[in-house]
Length: 255
Ligand SMILES: Cc1ncc(COP(=O)(O)O)c(C=O)c1O
Image (cartoon, rainbow, N blue to C red; front, side, top):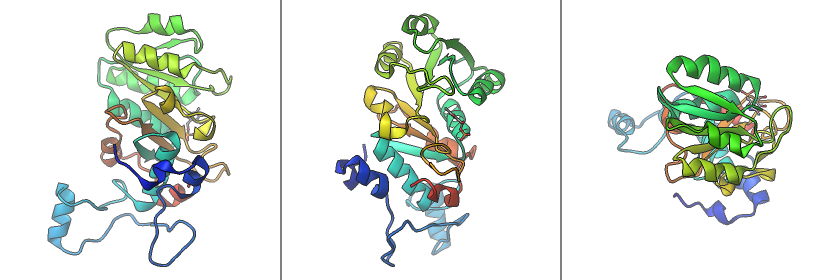
């Protein structure tokens, strides 16, 4: 797990300073990098960047410093190892699914989830051979009974939209892990200020940053935060090639 100086800071300090970039200009606020791509000092450097032999920015669908600030800040607030920002909350849920699942896999999901998530599971993931069973959010026996040998992911939104039903995240995490599954929690309603699913045992926290993370109705965005130890799986690769990456200017709205 990467260690950061802000890991030891209070939540309130992390919320305004974790991952902050500083240029040599002494600015107080976050610098913005509204650029699609990055220049190289030489063709050799470009080759080294593209081959992965030299770290650094190439193209903003892959990485962008403004987006990275948001990712590092949210990872710190959630107590996660890594965060991948996406262009919307739905892009975050899609990225989680295509990063972790393959044809033949099965999801057990709470019945109380955002409508577009149901459409994603039933109309799109199903088309690629991933099936979903729905259970009442608070009925742990129903979750247990719905798990099959091909189940890979338990998905819960808590509190749920719009019924605000509340799940026992720790109990669901225990159940998931006992069956070799991962638990993903859509933490959109609470934000890490009120609920930190990873600290309760969940493997993945998902956000529609469009809501309270932005808090001012200006931006569409999302994020997937992983606990580390392999739990988060695949998000960066999904961002780089399938491309649900956010733009840097919107990302500036979140920190
Ligand atoms: C709980 C929840 N998850 C996901 C989403 C989707 O987020 P977005 O609109 O940013 O794609 C929403 C949107 O309302 C939501 O309420």
